[in-house]
Image (cartoon, rainbow, N blue to C red; front, side, top):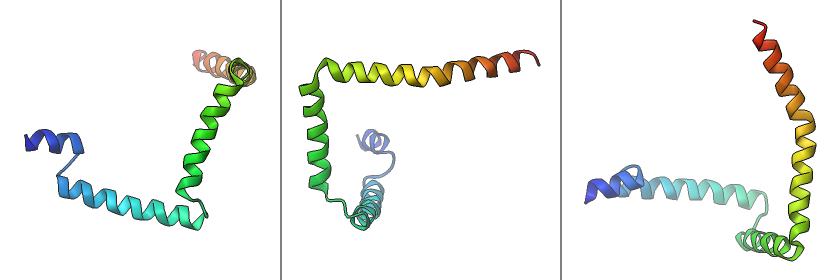
Length: 88
């Protein structure tokens, strides 16, 4: 049983707890330095999904617009790189 738990956690239980504590301390310090409160992050995520829900298909249309804008640049660059590498 302990081997399964260690495999799931990626190490021993104590080692995983220590790593989580260290990473939590570092992330907490960075968020504090940036003046970001966890409740603000929570409300931001909730507002994001509520906004998508309220906007409905308009949000999907904007995502499609972003794909087209990106494809105008990405596809020609991809084709040029492929053509140039094919000639070698």
